[in-house]
Length: 132
Image (cartoon, rainbow, N blue to C red; front, side, top):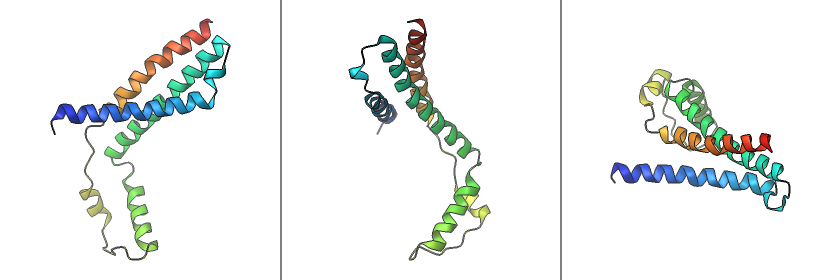
């Protein structure tokens, strides 16, 4: 597949997930039964804020993971699973081998772009909420 198609798939999947989170937040707050304009702006601002923060948090966790801040936790969880789950391969791997095997992730900038795009309507609806 060419790079354009892969990028298009990444961005479309992230926006589909963000739209799902947005509609979940909006429907749980009963947006369509509201009559007060200020309340509608507040619900819309909250609906865009939550997926924006979720995507920003996931992106920051990926950056932390690339710097190796979570490798110790991953190594401990892997060995815990090997000890507790029967019929798993019992191959012993040292921490140095585990760190050498892990490679940094690339190509997750679309998560920050999605978060930035979601921040725009968040700011707009927050300003509308405070001006009404």
